[in-house]
Image 1 (cartoon, rainbow over the protein chains, first blue to last red):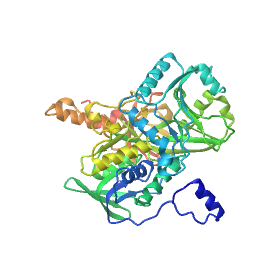
Image 2 (image 1 turned 45 degrees about the vertical axis):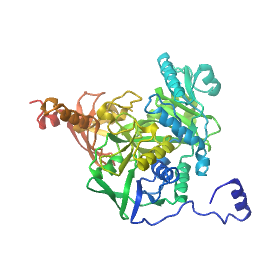
Image 3 (image 1 turned 30 degrees about the vertical axis):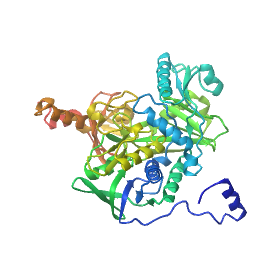
Length: 416
Length: 99
């Protein structure tokens, strides 16, 4: 069933009796050509593009809980392509271009809103670094603008421009950046995949990966063995757990990242704002809540909840940037588990086992990557060659000294 | 989280910085390998690969805003419960370091 304005009107006139579930709830078959482990944004996008763009069939997505119940439902919904390094920027720009056409492509309202993102700077050195970053973005076909203090003041007059420690001197702006309704991304991909015959199997946790002679033959699950010619793992947060079934150790630590939303307020912030110096970033949802966050807690965790010190740190950052936030009440806070990699960049690669593919290490930046991650992973699984924008995301980059370290922190996952 | 420091008693985790898996104590000896490739492999695994378990995890914490000692903390990564705290010095010596 295609969704459209006419459909809404027709249903309104006939008592909304024609709507059907957006996807089936099939029993797992005994085997598939492709099994995607992980029914989050990346896994569902992979299945969608495998079916739609690469014309593959007999595909299943296995999800241990419910679709979109992990990080795609826990992030702060920001999309952007403001990266510096060659290994990253073409990939994220490819992703942003896919976002721009996504709703038409999968016929689902994901509320893609290109409301613009600004990264504040406070010193000459930071301005120079953002100039360089903006130039790198433009050279890769993205858009970037350097704003001065007055231009930022015209947009957000209430900011604390004369903060003694971090006075606001300007910002790097990407107008095409913005926000997306995160759950709808998972639902849109799920529906699009289901319509093309993909089996979405929920409450089906992978408990083992079977191999024979160095080749994958299928996965053991809580709903029995499912055979597969190719298995793709897209379970960021739990990557080490799943890959431990084949005794693979990963260049990844799992860390908890918290996010917050305030009570609904009148329109205040019409874009996305990052205040890196204060470990704080914020946007405002369409319901009016300020959606904000800061740093990861900084220690290995699978708990999906963080601790008070980071709550305080984020709140302090918010107060130093926009002091009137202190009068707003916090409505909710939550945590998600991040695959923090050794250089802060992701991995989309084959493994040493034939037919076993891996997608993970997204750190706290996986949401914006969802369409390109799915596309590139599908490309890799269908053709056995990396997509041109994802050639750098290999396992062996650490061995070869080809790290993609945007922040220059080295092999220290909690600092990326 | 409260870390029960073996010398100073219970301290807030905020006084510490976190390094990661306590296996980082066991840095390979580059001269103990038959060839450069083997040494490179060992250092790659040491520097970049992690067990990253869900459950009990032995990890290195540094008391930066305290007595600057390194601790090996045994903590559950699912519940955040801390069950054991040792001086990293003692752990390293028990493994035969600094002899």
